Image (tube, rainbow, N blue to C red):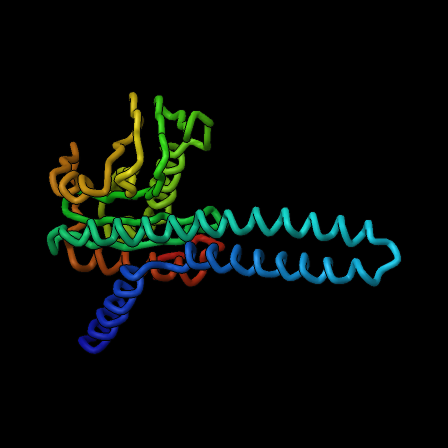
Length: 255
């Protein structure tokens, strides 16, 4: 029994180290769009040379224009994910000032291909699902409506809240098995780039700069603080989330 506990503890320690270093989702997106951009560029180059030899040059021209268009789109997406990755790393550094009472897990994949949670913080005063953004432009918020340089975008606050709900739903089995009350997961939206300009009115979730994040979490007072300080529960949560990264396309039962 003692050896089994030691083995479980070592597995959970390794899992925690992996999750702290970050999951796979963001890196997968960077590789995916980078590969697509390279393929489109290669097709465009081949089509340009092929136009000299084919009898219907219009086909080569259409192929070239389509490949260039797709290259630009994928290159832009690659750039957005790359910038996002830098933002996630900056938030990881900012959270490093939290005390040892907190566990920080990075880039957690959600089931059914629903994306990822940039950071999950687990501490004595609650669970925090953090959505990170790295804008250097003008960002405006009015409730759940968001705009970048005057253009309406998908709601950042709704995205953060969906991620928090997904985390809570995925951890329900863990808390039930451990006989603990399932806590509310607080959604936070954090902006990294200090050059960005913001107009935030009536946000539906806390909106912070990265420099404010660690202090906000440390001072956060939940109306009903959860009891997630036991080592057993923390190990169970880490183990469950680690399994979820192995099989992100379905809910993973706690085991």
